[in-house]
Image 1: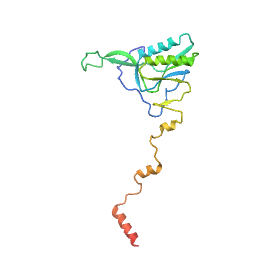
Image 2: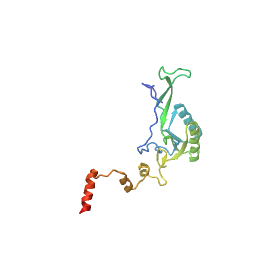
Image 3: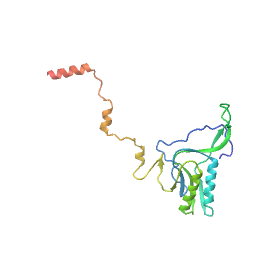
Length: 196
């Protein structure tokens, strides 16, 4: 959360969806294990992120570890009262939130903890957050949108057009590149060649 308030009221907005082939933020970078958003983009309040972080710390109490937060709640959410009529402005500040795109890593963890214990801690934390989450390890393949790389899927497969057509079919569908000749000229040329 920012230390100071916003200078201007932020808009509701939409999470940025990577469509150009970017896989940034979908792999574990600093830790050994991670928690990745699985279903679709969300706006997660700072309070829920704090509760999820406290859940992880409570489950891993007594072990040596370092927890990395990959997202920050830096967007102000403004609301009006329940029985306020339409108009009269955007409303007053309510809470901080974070926009999280699909397949982004939320938390990373590095330390001496056993994998099953970390998996259980992330499962409990994911239950406190909106959406579906998955457990990932360092070295797992990156994700583009909701498509995971690996098992025969490459980056080239994801960037290619969805429909593969042979060159002949594509060329036949294109307009011809020969110059436009009036129909009368072609019929007269055909009759002269037939007569000779």
